[in-house]
Amino acid sequence: MHEQSNRNAALPDAPGDRDAFERSLLPVTRLSGLVGAALVLVLFPLWSLFDAVLEPALAPRLFQLRWIFMLPIAIAAICVWRGGTRPRPLYLAVFALLTLPALAIAWMIPRVEHLEAYLIGYSLLISAAGALIVLPLRWTVAVLIALLALVVALSWQHPRPAQEMAIIAFFLGTVTVVNSAVAWLMWHVRLTQFRTMGELETRRRETNDLLDQVVRLSNEDDLTGLANRRRFRRELDEVVQIDLPLQAAIIDMDHFKEINDRHGHHVGDAVLVAVAQLLRLEFSDSGTAARLGGDEFGVLLQGEDLASRLVRVQQKVAAGLTADLNGIEAGLSAGIATHTPGESAHDLLRRADQALYRSKNKGSGVCVDGID
Figure 1 (cartoon, helix red, strand yellow):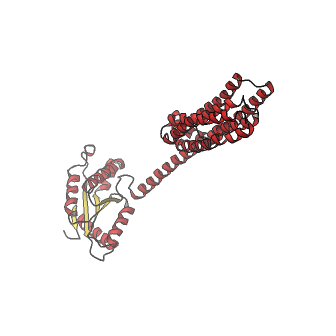
Figure 2 (cartoon, one colour):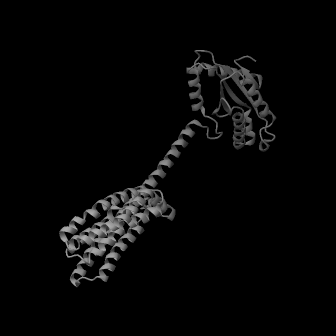
Figure 3 (spheres, one colour):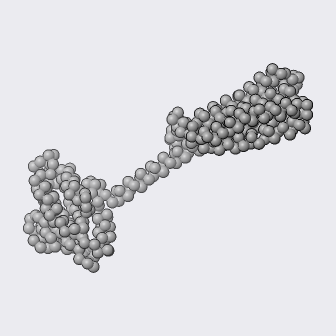
């Protein structure tokens, strides 16, 4: 029940959502209107053959009437063809396309002898409005009401016997009610499909966002936002495999345990974040800076100036990190190793770690390939 209520809450019910749904139907409205126009343009004049057989006395007048209406019907069909991107002109063209032949047939119904054939013809227009032509529901209802009103008004002006008037009213009224129900059902089916597709698209975007977040978290350190150990090792392995010139550095905070013990872990975290920011700024244009764990960082750089750049970072750390960390004495030690052709990533990091060990023994500083 709770899941169903959440799903219903996610369905678009705002007017803007309805407008978006109606706009999404414009291509279908145009296509169905063109199909209806083709049928009307072919069948409406072709029905004059039935006029000649069923109503020989009225056939010349009916033939003339049909061809008089063909011009505005053709104009309406052209408007349907050209109005695919503008809702209101397209709806008005479809409205005219259905009501123009209906007006002609409604004029015929009170005057012909063979009533059933013309009622069937009129009911085809009602069925087209309800089941074939795709319009917004309010426009479909307007068309159906107009079709029923036309035949009622013209039959009232030229009344037939009461029994036949009752047949006209019952038959066309039934057809109108049935097609109104069909139009309502089809409209809500399409609206439900549109809402479902919208919800699926929303879920798809949410899923993609979550996947992007998972990928980011799998490659990014939570605290500092730098690359994590996994990404550091992956990039190192990729460069080593193709033997590109590379320098790798392992960096360690000096006396970091004392900072945690004296000022608390929250200050220690703030120090790590500040150092990470300095590394990010220094290597944002090239290289990769990563937090390998704890107070240990790593840097990969394709070039020969890694030592000088780390010295700049070290000097900034020694000069003070941020105003909030004023008074916190922090320092860095770093070991750098330069990749040699054929050397494995493991061996490269081992030499950088040995250089870091020598730097620590000195108390601080940057040591390159074990050379002071």
